[in-house]
Length: 327
Image (cartoon, rainbow, N blue to C red):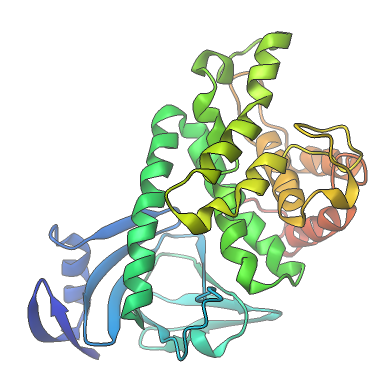
């Protein structure tokens, strides 16, 4: 049982976290909480130096952890303790399982950690208070924007969440720097935010788009990039290039700028592959989903023309490692 000395709602208390108390925390209406894709986060309280939260990972879902800022903060605390259920942890090429009561100190790992929950897992998070409170406030703002997307187009909302998940897995497999991972995560998540500016009758049209409608649809890349470049979160603005480039093609025949080859950022090249695969394997108003095998063949056909060949190769390996399940 884990004992915490925290400030909850302005009252200093000692708390022993039992199963019943974990349930109470999840249901307590006065606590701030976030719904963030594959998990819920509840801010429990804080001591002088640490903040405490409850991270509830949904069944058959993954989350990625590790403080990634390059702001030079010394001795960041970031610990995760499983309090209900079990957790599969993947780091580089190793996988291990945490049981109830087990703790992992993410600050000791130089790269991102993947947490996967088979049946749902509740995790106690201990983090440097200034970092956790800043991240919590910023995620509230991001959640607001995500809710706006869901309200306009539910497909786009769920699609964006999946693109974020698989983009970060590819980033890891390509051994890219952790410092740029947050930019990729949110650039991937908001890659279609420009569709908020596209009329719903065009987004949901069953028939072929007219030339004018197609131009309006394509403009979601530049409009989305403009939205992100003017966002109130300054760090999010840096991901606008991903939004703008995700429909560029490796052979230079994409849009909006006709970039080709290495002119296209790796981040956007990753989103391009994952975005196309998810779109092909999802039912849309204008067509039924392709099978996984059919979609793979389309990705292979586009290797070196529509898609960056290295990204395609790593993506296919990722699907193979997951036994061709798209979760």
